[in-house]
Length: 101
Image: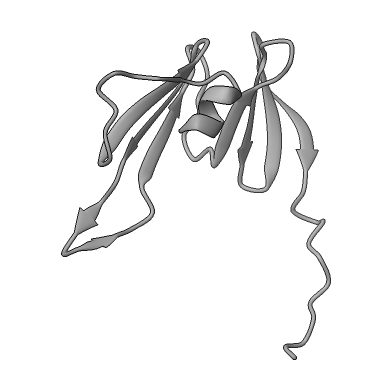
């Protein structure tokens, strides 16, 4: 959590080890750990930003000008008043395959 706080995220008071909320400006990140039978899996998380569809986003952050930038399905987008703007499509940029040693 300290690393997130250093980059401007605010930890909600109700945040605990099983679920929580982080806020950075108008960007919100909610998560819930699906902990069962003593095994913790990767937590479910949801990004929210007013007026933006962030369903399926694997990452979201505010740039240095406070604009929303996010990644989904191998592409990086910026949220604008007119909708999402594609900044980069990284799907064709896969590294070459290497054989195992």
